[in-house]
Image (cartoon, rainbow over the protein chains, first blue to last red):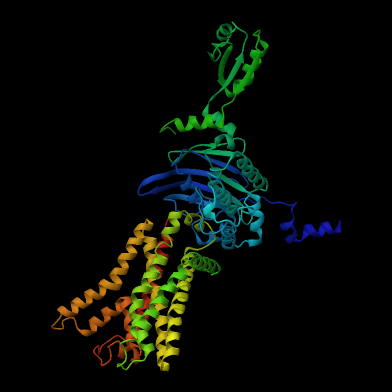
Length: 329
Length: 275
């Protein structure tokens, strides 16, 4: 008891105690940020507020400015207008250097010096970050590269390089992870493993920003989603917020005994959009918020439904819908 | 500084690994031995000792070779990393850009210094044990080694400058060849041309000698060929044909100034670079 109290009162112990955890993640704030290259706008007027410990998925077609957005967050390029703040600091300033050690970055198509071995590469980056090189072996193990650790990077496959890149990003307990297309080149088992690692960091309160095209993977894994379209933010919010915003309908698919399709079409065609979908199937479409009402109505009616499937709009439907509205914002 | 040393160690290790160090040592040592043994055949009647002859010949050789090796080491230091895709990641690390430049510079300079020390030193020590040498000759040899390293430093920095200016590695390589030709060969030819055409001495020796010192390669020559009497005798510069030759110390200062100014320009330009 006395020992417990002593632990709580000394500040050193509070910091190192595994039980008392403050939110560790870094906050990211982009305020009306624009970036032009040779008068050609790449990023236009983006406002983004990423909370500490949040996992944000950044979506958008190729060449839409995701990588430029990352470079802005990392202080590698200066915004043409607007302000970027990480933990209240402008990332292009000298003062930001101390924060850099808390950031893990995995660039798109990561590459390393070919003549070095995996261990050497990781040790080099660890030294630059001021991290003990003794941690490298366990990190290599964590990404499953122990067997290839003493092989030269030249001999690595795309997936292995990607994993080495991930190990590099995880060096030194980062408080912010910025991952640009991290799962390209990984097979399904490795992807799972990757998302498991990511979840551990997310649970520890690390802020994560991840850009990806693998929409089905990201669904339910991120807290919020930002969809970039032609340089500006087309949508930003949780999955259900985006579902509402996109206004996409829910599809209810009924399996019916032969000859009942026409009666269903007659009964519901005034209420919602009904389309016969082959022999014995019919599809009803309604807005998200009327889904439950409609299902109840169907089940309480005298239609002998043999099966029912409900498809809410998925992340890829929303994505397709938003990025298809060419020019509209 | 810690980060700079990490980069320096990595560059030096890379140099050992990809046989750069070995190749440079072989090249310089081979030429030194060649100069020592082939060049000593017709010497008999001059006043010079063998070592001073070697120093004179070596300074004419290193003025071509050292800039070449330095430029080959440095031209892709930045643009090469950018093209391989490693620069973007490095710049997100808690490292200043100048630390990266200083680190690479120290690493490359160490490669050059080791090659020059071993290459010139080994051959010179063999020659000095085989024939008689004056103590001043060793001083001239040390001066040659030191000024060769300084010459290397100048051209390393010039190489980095090309590397931060060029958008592509191939462009930087082309520019490096052009720079080497212009500074090591063409500049002298132009000066010689002016001297020949200028029969009525319009340009004057003072202007001419300051033009000589403005080029780091020529400053290197001036330093090594006029610094020590024993060397200038065998180099044919004794008897004061160049009454207003620039002071050797001034030549050294000119080289150092080149290295510093080029280094500052590199840091300035690299600081503005958006990867």
